[in-house]
Length: 111
Image 1 (cartoon, one colour):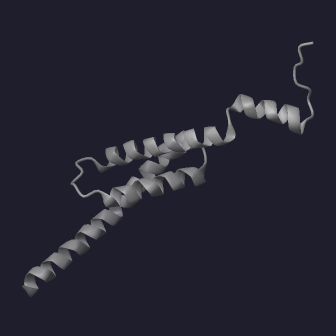
Image 2 (tube, one colour; image 1 turned 180 degrees about the horizontal axis):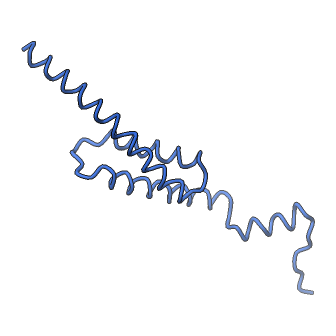
């Protein structure tokens, strides 16, 4: 019984070490995907962190963890862009707001 527990503990330690090395590679890969989509380091780091948290919760074996991280990171980044668009409006709406409110530019009037 003790030998089995000891072997299991050593095996778990080895798995954690391998996972730690792979996690860093997956983090860099996911960050590249997220940064290209979102354009800011902070947003990309947030999205990748969430993707890696979800990866840690996966119970089944993944044949291609990088593909899984790419898919989840992409979906999370799209969700982030949708939330931001709803919060900030479209670029044209922001430009119109800036011209009208900030720069006191008169809006078109049809008289």
